Length: 322
Image (cartoon, rainbow, N blue to C red):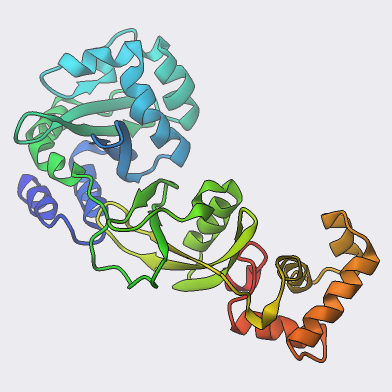
C-alpha cells in the first residue's frame, strides 16, 4: 500500500489523483470520510484539496476553525498523527460535539503535513462512525505516508492549459467547494461577487453540460458570461468563469429589455413580469413589443429561441441550459 499511495501521489497533476490516494488509503485506515486540506500561504487560509464522505460544511469546519480551536492545539506539537482515542476528553470538546458528532462520526485521526523544507503544508483528516476504528496500524500507516501526502497540498493557480479567453475578459475558477481561484494575467469576474451567481455556478457544476453561455448583470451593465467545465489538480470538477463586458447589446436591446426578455424566457406573463419588477403591466407590454420589433420576431416564442441560440439568456433563468 505504501508503494501504491506513493506512486499515486507522485502522479500529482493528473485529474482525480487525490481521490485515488484517499481510496487507496482507505484500504489501510478503514475510514468512512477523509479530507486533505492545504495551507494556502498567499491567502493565509486552509483550502480543501480533496475529500470523500464529508459534507462541504464539515470540510470547511475542519480547516481554519479546527486549527484555531483550543482543543486542537495539541495537534501542532504532536510528532505523529493523533487519534481521538489519544485524547481522553476530546469527545467533550466543541469540535467533536458541534462538527464531528452531528456529521455522524465517533472516531477520527488527524495528521499535520509538512513540506520538504519543513514548512507547514496542511492537514489530513480521517473519520469513522464507530469508536476504535483507527488502531495503531492505521496510525503508523498515516505517519509513514505524511511526507507523500504533502505532495498533494501544493496550492497552485490553474495551469495555462485552459480554454483561451476573449480579449478583455475577466477570468476565474470556482472549485467544487465554491472557492474562487484567480487565473494569472486576469482580473476576477465581477459576477463572482454576487451570491446568486455562485448558486448558478453550483447548479452548472452538478449538471452534465460541458459549457453554457449567457448574460449576467454586473452593476448597471450586462456582461456575457461563459461557464466551462474544467479539470485541474486539486480542483477536479471545477468551473472556469469567463466574463466579457457588453458595450453594445445585440439587437440594440436596452438593459431593461434584456431583463424583460429574461422573464419571457422563464415563461412569465406580462403581469408576472411587472409584479416581480415593480413596474406597470403597460410598461412591460411596451418593452415586449419593442423586443419583438428589434429582434424581428413574430412571437414571444421566436424571440426566446433566438435569445437561446445567441446566448442572450440570463444564466439564472436558463434552466434548460444548466
